[in-house]
Amino acid sequence: MVNKKQYYWIIFLLVFMQISCNQKNDIDKKSESTIKFDESNLIDEKNQSDKYVDKEFMEGYTTNQIIWKSNTADLNGDGIIDTIKVVSLDNRIFSKSENDEHGDFKAMVFINNLCIDFIFNWTMNSYFFKKGTKFEIIDIDKNDKYKEVLISQNEQEMEDPSIQRTIFRYFGSNLLTKTKILSEGYSAGQMNLKNNEFSIDHHRSPDIIGTYQLSNFFIKNKGLIEKKLPENFIQAACPFVYVKNKTTYIKQGEILRFLNAKNTEDWQFLELKDFELEKDVLTIKLTEEKDEVTFLNSIKLKIGNTEVFTMDSIDFNKSFLKDDKEYFQLNKNDFLTLKFKLPKNKQGKILLFAKGYYVPR
Image (cartoon, rainbow, N blue to C red; front, side):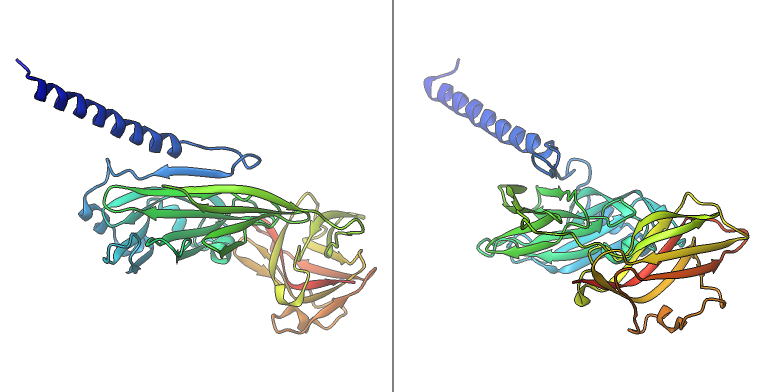
C-alpha cells in the first residue's frame, strides 16, 4: 500500500526522469544535425563514452600511432591538466609515398577517458597534410573557463583546397563534443578569433564570411555576410599554364592563384593532364594575360616522388628555378616556355609546382 507521501515521491521521480531523458534527446538531436553550406555548414557529434571509458585503452596505443598529443591545457576549468591524444586507426596515413593524395583515414581524439572519432583527409607525407594540418589549443570565449581543441586540415580537393576546421569541447568526464565547420569556397577557410567569437572566410571574390560563437554544447552559426564587390571590380588572374599537345597547346589552368602580393608568396601546384607527349618531352608555356606582373621564384615538376628538372637547351638563366628569392618577371603578354625530359617508366600524376606571387596593376 502506497501512502500519500510515497505517491508524491514517485510522481517527482517520474517527472525528473522524463526531463533528464528530454535533455539527453536534445543533445542527441543536435549531434545528428548536418546541414549544407547554404544553410548551416556545421556538423555536430558527441563523444562515444558508452564505448570507450577505459583509460588504459587510450594509453595502450604505441607512439607511432599517435599523430599529436598535449598535456599542457586545462580544457574544462577544473584546475586539472587534461591529456589529449590524436591516434591513427589507419596505417595508410603513414605512407612514405608523397604521391598518395587524399582519402578517409580514420583516427580517434582522446581527452582523458573520453574519445570521439575523426577523419584525416591526407596522408602525413602528402603536400597538403604538411601545408594545412595544424593542432591547437584555443580560447574562443574569454569570459568562460573553457578552452577548445582545434584541428585544421585541407579539404579533399587537388586545386586550392579550402581549410576544414574541427573544434572539440570537453565538459568533464561525461561529455566530449566536436563540430566540423566546412568551408566550401575557392581557397577559403581562414579563421579569426575576436570578441568571444570567431569568423571564417568561406569564399573569395566575392568574399563570404561566417561568424560563429559557442552554443551550450557545440558551435552556433550567427550568419553569413557577403561583401559586395565594387562596380568597377576586375578580378585579376595569375599566370595561365598551357601544355603542348602535338602541334597545339592545351590550357591546364592557373598557377599562383590568389597570391596577389609579395607577403602572400607561397608554393602551389597544378595537375597536368589530357595531352600526348612528343619523345617523352613535356613542353609547358606560362603566359601572363592580365594587366599584372608575376614574380616567379622557383619552378619544378614532379611525377610521383620523382622531381624532373628543365632541359639544358632552354635559353634563359635557370638560376631562378631555385628557391632563392631570385625572380623571373612576367608582364602582360609575356610568356615563358619550359621543357622537361620525363623518365620513360613514369608513374603517378604529373604536377607542376611554382613558388612566387603576382601584383595586379
